[in-house]
Length: 186
Image 1 (tube, rainbow, N blue to C red):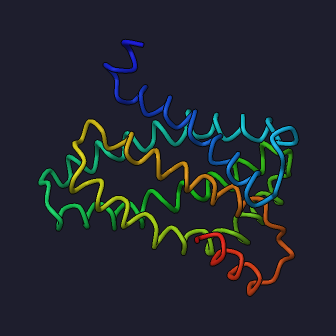
Image 2 (cartoon, one colour):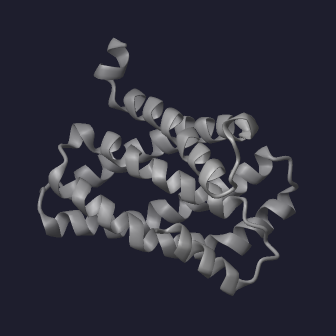
């Protein structure tokens, strides 16, 4: 337990390994209307692996880099960090998530690419509203040592949304997607 307290990267990895499956459980129970006994636990495991071994470390490194690039703790610097994250880190995360989870599901390279093309833009649009608000608060008011932990709670909510987007059928029309996204955001 001492290693978790001493090493922020490990603390972030553990947080994301636990919270991303929770986000997936939230999506499966609220959106897919699954009971606890019918939850896809293998999908939860995949979310935990992705959260723990990809999101946790990459977000930790991004937070460190952002702190070096904008060391001041004020609203202007926080907005710069949030905007930079939105145009650099988030597209990479969304692409890696959609592609990686498709590969985890046994889809081909081409099918995985097609899923990224079909779902990236709508997912990114929602992130453009969600993450700048979260990260501006995070970078302005949360001490650096707790920023990854603070973000992990909102990342759990984001993982529920990503699970929702991941499991939408690609045949659904754009209008249906937007209605579902709007309803899911409440």
